[in-house]
Length: 253
Image (cartoon, rainbow, N blue to C red; front, side, top):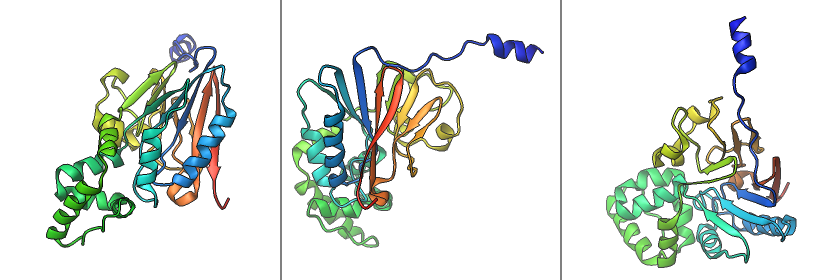
């Protein structure tokens, strides 16, 4: 009986919402799919009400696996829509690229994430996986080929962003830790501990990183990584007031 009474009087989390007139769009993991990105940006612009306070958020993973990483970085880094706030978050793939620039010995890990496709997109031949010398040579070639403004873009990426009842991070958050105390390792990399948690995080977490065939909406999180590089579907969530909806760009569907 006490359990039942406790559940009746336990404070319930507030419904996530945004202030009147505020609309937020957040785009999931792009992974080198410049074609899908361009289509989805057009759909977002067509959908948005110009009189609103509009924000566009990228949740990271612009590169790797797809064929057009360099083009995606160029497009996202240069994007400037008058009247819009544009927020660019860092994903674990961006961190892997930065790690490679600092230490070529991290190539083994980055290679598993789709490094060869990214190197090709910048005109750099991927190294032989078993040849240490070629890895160092590829790092030097990539240093030369990687535009300075792309490096500046990567260095300036945010790890999280909060607005209204929503918190945005690439991978998610560590359960049991306040949002303001989350660390980069979890914001970029966490998976099962976050995905399986039913905890109220204080705000609804909007994230990518963990792909699914369709966007996922739970009471405590919204997942918007629909595996664009393999599914040919890139997804964005639209948040307005207490409403949640989704837009997508697709090819061959």
